[in-house]
Length: 291
Image (cartoon, rainbow, N blue to C red; front, side, top):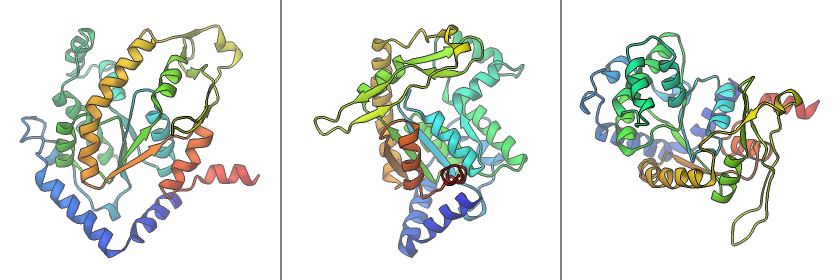
């Protein structure tokens, strides 16, 4: 809670003018955003979820970033620090597929055919997850990699309030090398990365060092590579993402909610700087540093 209180104090220190701008931006976005029902979605998420003023709840953030940039890593760390759920739509889809829910069969057909899951299904899963959390007393959330389109962002604005959007960025050459180094243990299921990235700064780009995330000895012989982690596929994924994400970034930038963060390196280098820019403190790390 100390981290959350510090965050609220920092927001309050922005002054009356800043608060007024945020309020006007929020109201304008709320008026402009279509509701889920208006978009033709039958589940009526906007009727189920209760909007609460920011002062009465925890943070409601979105994390954006290219595939492989580390959205899940930083979002999950922040969710633990702030005491809010980390919600990734990919996990929602996988959980539904593993269930006996009404959407499981429909989702299985879509995934098996290699098609994109529709906005309607995604919002159905997301609204159920948010409502379940609300009923269980959860306050706030961090959405991971969602929304992906302006349409999704507009409908999300009609369903709930988004306080801030953190856009993680990393040099493309580093991203490619990082993705090619990814490995999964076939036994324990944990993710590792064999790439040792040490890129010199040139042409105005910063130097970046990322140490490998090596597996324990008992996992080393059981490592597998994702079939789609080839350079050609990775670069194509990045191109598609960049083409799709720019309008979403512009959407949140126009609302004054976009925070762009260039990762300076791996977790040891990036985590403290991300906390600093968010005006947060990791009490556990402070205890370790003082020990």
